[in-house]
Image 1 (cartoon, rainbow, N blue to C red):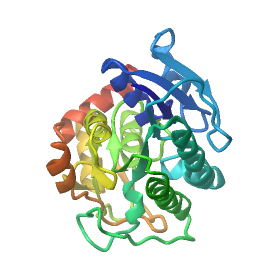
Image 2 (image 1 turned 120 degrees about the vertical axis):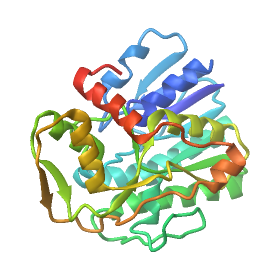
Image 3 (image 1 turned 180 degrees about the vertical axis):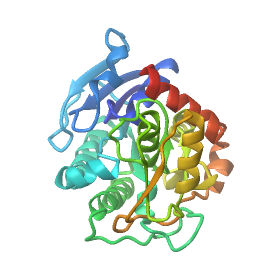
Image 4 (image 1 turned 180 degrees about the horizontal axis):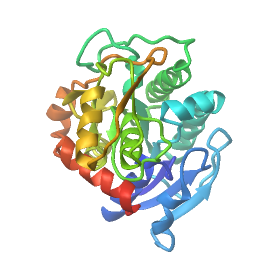
Length: 310
């Protein structure tokens, strides 16, 4: 297939491009580098099966030639990024998704939307299954990301129902691995960066809030299985192993051999208290299950932060 990936220079987008190219597909990558990094796709320069277009998807998208699939991964994804860029985050979720869907309609291509576990907000149930409608504060600081993705899901399903476009909606839970930015703002890169510099490891609240961490290679495999499925409804992809933020900080401190102390700070507004995917649908329909254990994935991520090798 010839596949367009928006947000190709991002953490997930760049790994997805690598995976698809290894599978023999041709990839057109698109990014405006708001939060993506040129270094993430530098190794693809000169690859005859990869073409890059620098473009902001909130503007009309034009790609010469045929496309069999459009994978819409463009969006700020960390709290630091979407709090710094609230309006671009809303625009890429609304205008960007609309433009990408319009291109899918024009090219008669399959459309995959990178949605998020954040559409569940601060959930009142645990684990979160795809039928749960969520608990989101639409006007809070995190609402710009949550509601952008909720709108993106709504318009994706509207195009599926009205224009019969085949769609795939993946609700991505916390993912980590090489190519995350040091200044990303999420727990894993924050803790690793602070631990490697022997600075205080910043934990918000008492650290009792939970996350479920999926290693990037597992996520990308799940994305590919979903791409090749016939599921039009949303699917959770993530690791159901749940861990407290404080426990994660202690594990990273141990793995890095750091002398850092743990510093507690006030909990940010609307920070989810629990986050764990119910992946029964992915297991049953995609025959997908994460394989990489947390400490194994963390060691690889720490090695990347130490060496810069991707």
